[in-house]
Image (cartoon, rainbow, N blue to C red; front, top):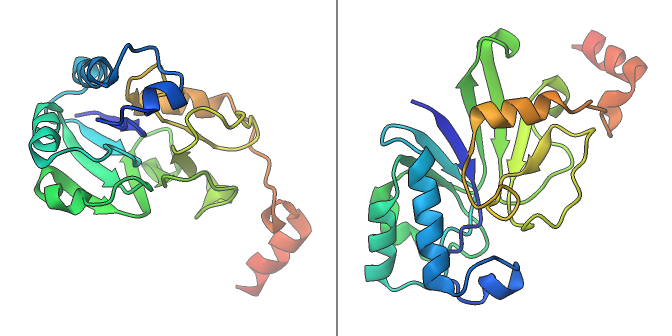
Length: 197
């Protein structure tokens, strides 16, 4: 069993091909490529964390057909285009607006890597100054990568139209040099807070 992360597939969204400069002739070609890319890496028992904007104004029949073809156990963090997604809740392990997942990893603090999942990019998040990571979508690869933040865009436009594995996320995070941007970066203040309890 492996863990995968993705976002902003926008299945059925005709105009996203143009808006996001996707290399597909039309929405049908895009949908088929995204399904095939997903299924080429994701196993039936794998966990897939989709960070929103999964589909856009699809008929129930078309939505069910696409969801029925996708491999893995899908967890959905809602995006701004996921209105009506609750009609398909039986296809998801869960549907949330924000989530923190814990991945077993012997290299992580106490053997568990915390990851905060949100459709939108955040500057700070729960446990961000204690090694937690943040994954997001929404931006369609338009936000510059921050080498000082343990966060990045897992949307299909940023990741070659494939889901990204936990192992790849871990490797990319290991290249970053975390620098706190809020009061947690002030060692003297942090020590005072720790001493206060």
